[in-house]
Image (cartoon, rainbow, N blue to C red; front, side, top):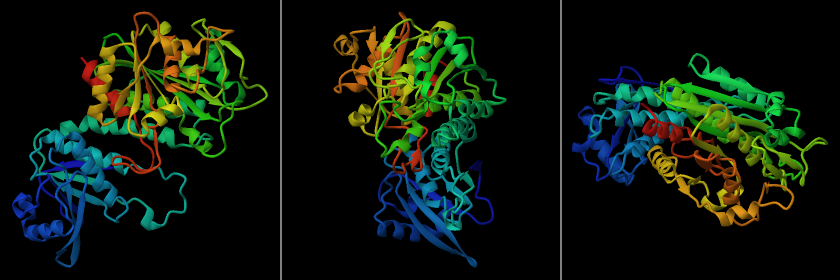
Length: 489
């Protein structure tokens, strides 16, 4: 989607949208440029019971010479903050994406917003317009996207400067959505590395890849154990963006490119969804792309633990004991609790080889998190209150919200094993918490750590204000905002 900012509407065919704040719509609230149809717009708003609610849209058609122009009113709410402006842009894109319109002009001159606010409307529209139709070969013409350009007119100074980094963040979101959307026969550990490497080409990101042999020498048997049943070899992908000389922070993502559950196999119904069990790794890759593309002045290391969890004669069994890179032993009670086995070795590796003192991991880790929070929040666990507060604030600002859960000794005892240092699952109750406690055991002294369980957030069964049905790209905007607020110099 092409976005540009202009002083006035371009000549030629286009749809025209006018954002309005909440309240009764009247002609005097419309931009001067639409005075010729202000009365019609006012009557249309009354008929549609439109009062400028965030994301509400009224559509009408204007008679211009020998053609009809599509015109729209879109609400930005009582307080047009960044989130409301993005939702308004998203609503316009959803309305017009397959409408036959090629160009949308958004006239923001009547809004009391700065240039950054105008950029946010475009950002919302671009995010909502993303689709992945690679495998849809039978789409009818009326089903295919037509909207290709957005022109924002009447924006105040600074709009283009504000848009530049947002465009790069959107590209990071799109990489994540692409990775999550692709089926598991296309995206598996090796091809995940290839796809991400291609996307990062020319951006100055350091790339390091470990295969089974290298990980075996390091003793990463927890991660490798998950991959034993698959013909797709495991990979550890490390992405380094050094935009400053500050101490690095680490983002670690669970990348189970398909999860059958292994020997503890999942029910068949809905198993196809498990292609997105690599959403945490996808978010890390997308965040690194966003940071590098916008030249963030921060030092960030992204680590993706990549495996496929399959049943096979060589697969890991319930009751097996593995030794992790940290030296701690794990009794594998359930092979479907595999994400924590991947993450524990990835977390140990980044601490011991990169010397990081702050780690945020992201994982579609537990179904219990969806039971707890549905699809509205990601779960947050942390050993550091200040780090947790920073992530909560970033989540609110980016519109990717988090909710903090407890950790504690009583929960930790639930994963003690009779035969090893720990078992990989506790009882049914508090399943998301005991999973986080498992990871906590791999965080070394003095390291600030947060775990984001995003099981309910990376995929949506219905369209949202900023995404189509399917992959959401959750985590990229949150991590970008988190880094920008706290680590850029």
